[in-house]
Structure formats: structure tokens, C-alpha cells
Length: 117
Image (cartoon, rainbow, N blue to C red; front, top):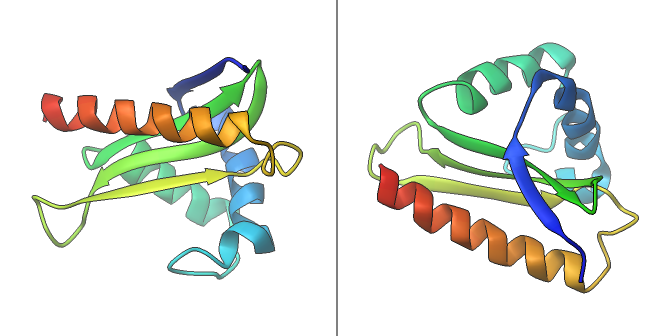
């Protein structure tokens, strides 16, 4: 089974995440399917990943960048959280163990995050 790990998103990850987010496979499942610019991506990073609203993770499997996960407080409801999850690396997107491990770890981090808050 692959070793799946989560780490905080860093500025160096923004372009990879933006490319994933702008792919038709990911964009069609988002609330907004428009193309994300570099400026919009950085504003998102500052607001969500570095702000007070939540946590964002870069997901790797055996050292390979595979996806993104987040848990953030909704903008309009203080006691409501939004969970984001996608596998952006299409090489592993259709595999069996990576999505399963990815989903399990997201649930684990979500519970821990909610207990901390």
C-alpha cells in the first residue's frame, strides 16, 4: 500500500494546485468552474490556507504529489465547515489504494481539526 502523507500547503505548491484546479476533470465538480488566475490562487492561499478560516493540505503518495484537501470555516456561517478534496494527479486518480488511503486520512484530519477548534 502506498504511503500517503499530508503537509501544509506552501507557496511553491500553488502553481501545481492551480493547474489541477483548472483541469476540466476537477473544475466540472467545483462550485465555480472558471479558470483560476495566479493572482486569484494567491489570494485564495492567503485567505484560506494562511488565514484563520481553516487548514489546507498538500497530499503526497510515496513522495509523488497527488492531491489537495482542506477543511475551512464557511464564510457565511461560523459553525459550518466546508471540506474540499481532490486528486489532481491524473496518473494516480484512477488507482484503488491511493483514493482509499486519501479518503481515510482526510477523515482522520477532519475529526482532529474539529476537536481542536
